[in-house]
Amino acid sequence: MSKPIFSTGLRWLWLVVAVLIIDLGSKALILQHFVLGETVSLFPSLNLHYARNYGAAFSFLADKGGWQRWFFAGIAIGICVVLAVMMYRAKASQKLNNIAYALIIGGALGNLFDRLWHGFVVDMIDFYVGDWHFATFNLADTAICIGAALVVLEGFLPSPGKKQPDRA
Image: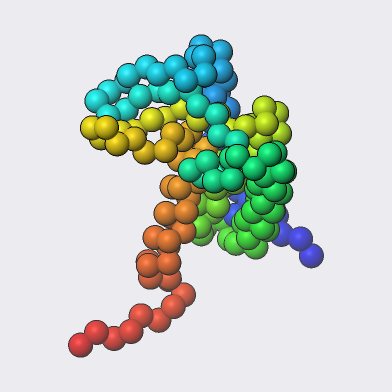
């Protein structure tokens, strides 16, 4: 017997769509208005910088000849399927987990689109302090990191169904 979708965590799939629109829109603007390697200063310690990532986080496996494109695409699809199933099994009222999963799915799909369409992921956010630069990233990466942080945070919060230990 199936549940009505709006009673499940899939109620939060609108957030996946929002992340995709924002992520793919920002990448389209970079592709239209920047040449590879171009940098524009926004604020102290923050630049827009068009970079291509052929690997995963921190360009992991970027120089391995192309097989990693399909490997990371498969991982993204697998993660999206698993998280969507988890959202379906969750109640819509479990907001923190469902929001976290939706952010991760949206970010994973944004980067998956890049891998499949361009053969690389478009990165554009360059955060730096002095001469030290963090790895260039994009809004999909940001959504994934926020989602992952929310999953960790949820693990530290008391669950309404669990009995809390007595404190003396």
